[in-house]
Length: 270
Image (cartoon, rainbow, N blue to C red):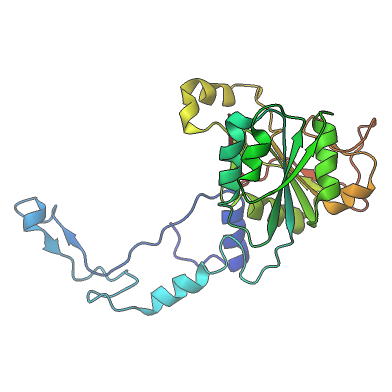
């Protein structure tokens, strides 16, 4: 443990790079311990009068440390006042009625200031269209032409600066878009994706498969690309052709790099 302050840039980087969180020790100066008591229990605890490392004093009045901690974490994990570009989330589905509702419900819980959801129904014969129609999204129905065609349709309809693709059997973490967008904007990436985790209800077998050597479950259920991709003939990423393409080159104007595993941009998928 260090008593040296961590500068704002490093602190923000630590959280945005995957640190699950942090705690400050402690809230108050008031402490009672039992191991110094002759009785050795809580009823016989001894108050520590010289442990003054709280954010508030013994009367719960704020100390200067409270304001310092508040200021230190105000820009974590993302700086205050950051510009968040509009994002179009495209969900392509073909007979995905079993999982689509959960996917759209979780999208409605996203913590992101400016996004739209577009569902491309690729000729489903089940209740997918009706399910999409009952949620806050734009529904586009087409004949069945396959996933690549459905994603192209979604991209052409998208109005956001960034297009984020999501499979219909996945549901994102509430902060999914913030981590994807921040990584793309800060790193100058043309595209980005993140890890997929099995939901708790899938049980231990799914967890073991996910952790298997060689990663037999590929991270293909999510990908985000900048809108410049609309003007490029070829985009191949995560095993799916996103636009009409035959080559394997990924090149979007001056953006040539792809970040496939954004920490924090997490999905649970079946």
